[in-house]
Each structure stands twice: as C-alpha cells, then as structure tokens.
Image (cartoon, rainbow, N blue to C red):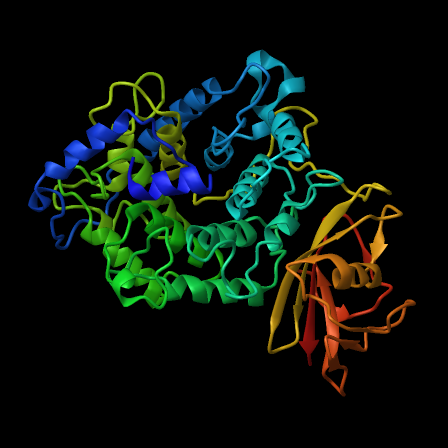
Length: 488
C-alpha cells in the first residue's frame, strides 16, 4: 500500500481507496523497475482521443454492474470503518442514481435510504471522529442525492465540518499536519452545491483554503498528503500522483481556472509521470488503478481532457486507455495492479469514476425509479432535538468559521437565536463575541465590535443566496448555511 493511501485510510478514512495488505509485496516489487522505463518525455502528439465513446460507454455499463454487486443484502454500501460508500460518487458520475440501486429489486432497501440512515445514526462516525469522516460523508451523500446539510433533524454534515476549522491556522481543516483534510474540505464544501445548484458556502471561505492549497504545492508541481507549507525540505520532496489529482480538483471546484499557474504546474507534474507504452501515471509504487483514477478525476474536475494533447503518449496511449485495460471483461470490476487476477472494490470505484468523467463529487442523476425524487432532505427542525448550523462571520479583516449547536423550540428559528447560541456554544469558539441588539427582532447594528457605519453594514446570506441587511428576525431553517459579512 503506498504511503499516501496507507496514512490516509488508517488515520483519516478520507480517501476513497484502500488496499488489502497482500498487495504491499507486489507494490514493493515494482520499485525495482528502472525509472527510465517508466517516465518518458512526450513530444507533439495527435489530438484524437484513443478510447472511443463506445468503449467508454461499455466500460461505464460494466463498471456499474460490478458496483451493484458490492451492495449488501440489507441495501448497504457503508459499514464500520472505511467501506464501499465511495461507490456513490462513482455511480453518480456514471449516470446511476443511488435510489435506483436495490438488493434483488427491494426498493425499501435502496442504497440511498440505507446510506442516509447510516449517516443519521447518532453513533456515526464513532467516538473519535476526524474532519475527513464528515468530508467523506458530504461528498457521498451529495452524490447519492442526500442534501448533506439536511441528512436528519440532528445531522448537518456541513456544520459538522465547520467545527474543524483551525483558528490557529486559518485555511486548514482538521490537523494542519494532515493536509489532505484541507483538500477534501474544498472538494466537499465547494463541490456539494445546494439542490438548486447554488454554492452554499461563501467564496471568501473557499479562497482562504485555496491559498492554503497553493502554499502546500511542492516544487515539482504536485502535492502530498502531509503539510509542506513553510518547510523548504518538505516542498522539495517528490509529490504523490493521488494527492496531486485531488488537490488539482480542490482548486478547480473552488473556482480556480485551469489556466492558473498552480493548475498548469500540477498538469506538468502529471505529464512528466506518464508511462509511454501504457498511458498510466508512474505512481510512487508503480502504475495502479487507484492512483491513475485520482489523477484522471483531478484532470476531469479541471476540464482538462485526459485523452488528448499532453496526455496522449508517443505510443498512442492515454490514462483512460490504462484504466479500461485494467477492467475485467466480463464482470466490470477493475484490478488494482496490472498483474492482479481479481478485481478490487476500491480500484473499481476509482476507475469507474475517472472513466465516467467524474471529479470527486457529482450531482445525482435523475432517478429511474417511478416517483423517486432526485433529492431527499429534512426540511424542518424537530423541536427539542439538538442540531447544528454552519456559520461564517466576515468583518472584512478576520473570517470566523464555526458550527453552532442549539436546541430549537419550533420548526424554524431566527438569525438572532443562532447568533445568541454562537456566543455560547460555537465550535471553534469565537464566532460571535458581541452582538447588538442582544434581544428582540431588530437589525444587527454591531457584531464582534464592528458597528454599522454609513454604507458599511452587516449583511446576511443563507445558502449562497443574495445578501440582505442582517436582522435578528431573519427566518432560519434546518440545514441553512449562514454567512454574515460587513461591507458596502
């Protein structure tokens, strides 16, 4: 198991891949392959893609068939620890709605309903959660057609993630040492739009973490799972194929264009790792489906065609060619290593997502099941049931980010009640340190020491909608993502 996936799966459960321990020896054996045989320089290449639309369509169909076979008899994909729940992101990319995936046609056990119940369980994700647990939940809930902010009356995955903002290291999510938590925060928070397609979190929040991703880019143009910012030795170390794909995607999904220098440098790093005769990327422990899938998903997310130009080798091979060559026919599963003789669930998920053109989060397709809605969500608070909301407070100088826990006494609440609760029970603390007025239903005139002054006023927005004058009386519903900003 390569160091990136080993560290991520054991410490964070963030990554959509994990390998059996028995593959480690096979991967170590690949280290003896001379580098000259694995990374060849590319020259001008034809523009035509090598895998035809028909081949890709067949690969998608067969891949979905295999992922369907992974469903448990109870309808589940997720279980204790790291499991097959990343299948939802791959199924959505391939055009299959999770609600349509059922064990033996039993619609009461459809994959979406069962996964929603799994996420809503108060015992999930265990007694010692980390930020990547919630980021994983956001990406897969969104792909399955579950609004991640409204999983249940008590489960708001957006708010759960906000609780891991680092006041001591703004821009990082979770332990700064585990840089992957910040990459997946962007993939989750920027990628999981509202059901209407709006960006639910403020751009200022995304931009702060985009800056963090930029600061962690290695000298060779890629990234690794651990923090490198401010450490010249770490920045000089070789990058990882997998995390480069994820970090590229995190930038592009957050609004960074593919022409940005950070993206073009990452593209150049991946290009330098292409293997001429297969089209695979030469990952740390050799060519494999998971690393290749992550890299292709990164290119997909940035709108960069992985079958043309820089990614078509002199031998006429592309990364998509390699992935399709890794797929068993019939059966549809993907093997992890070219030498493997059986499919891997995680490799099949990563391979299908990439071949289908997906990044890391994909909006759910319209279900084929009659009467099944595209989205499912809790639309109101349950009085007496403790819940949380995601809140940002931007005074133009400092950006505060927190999860606000409170117990509603009605099916809706007010902005004033949320701000009052934030002063008492926000995680991390400090989102609200002062508020005027402190009661009633009037306009917010002062917040955290910043007072309305002429055209500079406190304004509020919910789920990315147009902002208006902040008022204590503003109605707030279950799962609303709230942003307050001071300015003109």
